[in-house]
Length: 409
Image (cartoon, rainbow, N blue to C red):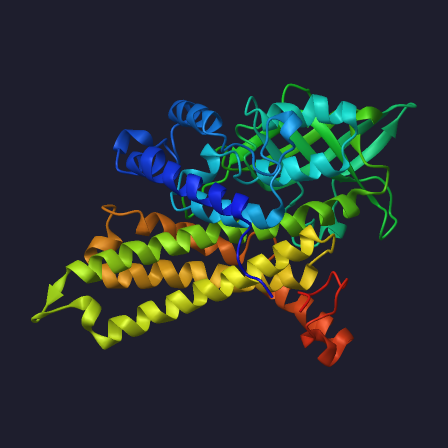
């Protein structure tokens, strides 16, 4: 087994780290760099994005012909971790949710005409996008098959959308949307996916839902559909393929969350160690106290476990596998690790950590969502339990050459 990055990907990682240090981290200390929802101000973001494009660090998940870097998924893992050393980083490099997941799924399943109309502007950074799936109870949450929003055929070439969605990330600034709606009562093929534009009539944003933590650009919105008409050419894949599309999109999207969260966890560790190495109490540095070393050691081990799980899942996806259990393992581990790292760093920094003098309190509030978004931790634990029930002790095999489900020895 070889755990080293290919030279080209290591070079991307190092360039990303240097760009973050030189162009993004200094902005975090500027009070006027933030918008009203504690993210980077959009006009400032546009300026730094131009620098990222000039540096060749732009849209790592997208094809070169569209202006992206065309990295393999293991390359995403290396780059995204460095990008999210800053709380502003992913948005700068155009690898933040939900655009990141939308770009990947559109690249994978959209027709050439759909890619030109809907994908290219997102890759180029001219528009933002959103994925419209989650609904209020009793509608879809972690289980897309519970979708209640309907798409009803109108004439020979149009669909009419009616329904209610909420917690739709980025909807407040999105121009392009991917929507899941029910087209039949078939339990497996009852959903279809559609594309629509912000300027089309027949839908509205009810509110931007206030949340505990800092927000992505565009927030988390509640939306109502009341007669939105979508033509056949804006259907993604085929009628009844909505659940399949959701699976194609959500697996890798969960993993990219983990990649970014690892960057935040490492940043928290970095701030914590910097403080305890400098701070003295009762005659010795805090970093020399065994109790502090134990806390830092626990976080360091958790981060490394998360990185290995993420890379294993990324490798499986690059080999063409679904990596379902690998992604679930990574999602559980890294979500917990992010919270542990932020909490530990605040504890070690004391009042400084609890204040806004560092980004630790930002990361702490942001971290709580990690165990909820893209499937609650309990859902992923159910996935792992079912997989074990099916495979038994074979769950732990290393695999053989040509086996895409495991590392090959």
